[in-house]
Length: 145
Image (cartoon, rainbow, N blue to C red; front, top):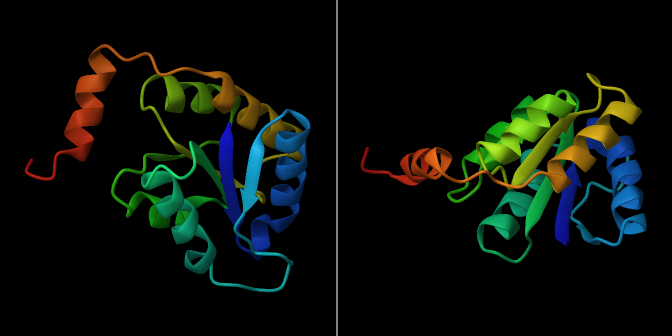
């Protein structure tokens, strides 16, 4: 799978770990930064990730920050992105199965490294259920509503 990843300084350490995990599991990964733990402004790195997913250049995106909240907000401002902030395996499963989330947001300061990997793995392996959920996804994208 083609995946793009990005973080601010507060998500930098987990970004490196998850990128290595993804590559070890055969995924093609593009890293949009940041490239150090020096303080940064997260929109600079997150918006390009969201745009790359929205335009179809990448199948999925992963964004990280301290809490993941601001990162998810930035990503969800991009039309065509359904970013879910996940904090456990079940939230990741539901984000994919019910919401067809194409971007995953994680908070490095709020979850363990082991949980981050488990959440990522679940999020990647879970398929969208479709059905009644498809109708709801269409409503999310309907700007006339």
